[in-house]
Length: 334
Image 1 (cartoon, rainbow, N blue to C red):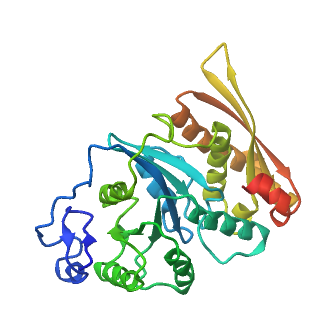
Image 2 (tube, helix red, strand yellow; image 1 turned 90 degrees about the horizontal axis):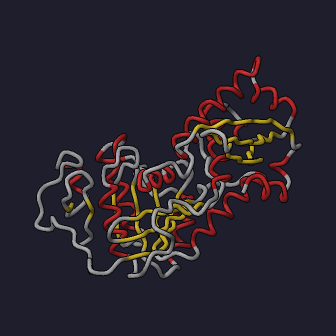
Image 3 (tube, rainbow, N blue to C red; image 1 turned 120 degrees about the horizontal axis):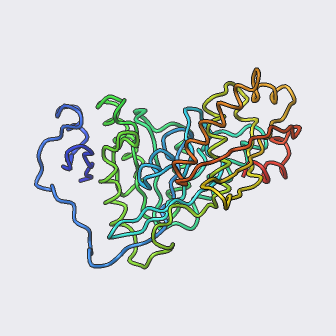
């Protein structure tokens, strides 16, 4: 019988009806209470590639595990544009997560680029993680992608995210719908936002990894350079502060990073590219208010990440229709 992992009480749901009759995630007791790793004497390491539709919470999940913001987030879809390796480590394992752009029906050159980046996440993994929301069914767009997953001979985990804001009935129906697809080895309901169930997902994932030594030096949290994170932090603030099509017309690129020798200060320059001159005015804002707000918020995050004072210089430039030109999309968007 398939077992569902209860995220709040560390107990096992013997079937999906426990969600409906047991008061949601307050699960009934089960003799299968303790989750034991197959071999705790061996350090484990490997690659876990995280896939899913756009805006299901993949980056929030990664950031919670790593303990710092290594992948930017916003309420808008398609915030993540690059495949980013983020490293989690504890005393038993080092897991290299690959955060990917969300799967969606692409429109335009940039959209096609994002979907290609996401599908590359099917390669080079030890475990595949697929994240969904409790939408009560397997949407058609997921059915198409699950057929690809089914043909890959790797362990597969389904994470049903956002259980904190969805009903037990929807959670149960979602679990049942994906169980019927007979694709996954583990099914774990979680909330990446609150952390509920994340530790159990981590335990189940660790069990599926091979034994091995560290793949990255101890203390590493991402394979991306500081310059990439700086430009991403700026782009995140633009996503959060602007509306309609503008965030999808913006790219950011770090121009320089310089440490002052005479004081505890790091200077950073970031270029903000837009596709039209009219968008430049929106980013700058009346009397420069918008670009100042973007800079202040990005600077605070960067100072928290780097532990030093930051001087951030933002310059807005027009690169006409960069998001429709393949070479520019590769240079600026990925």
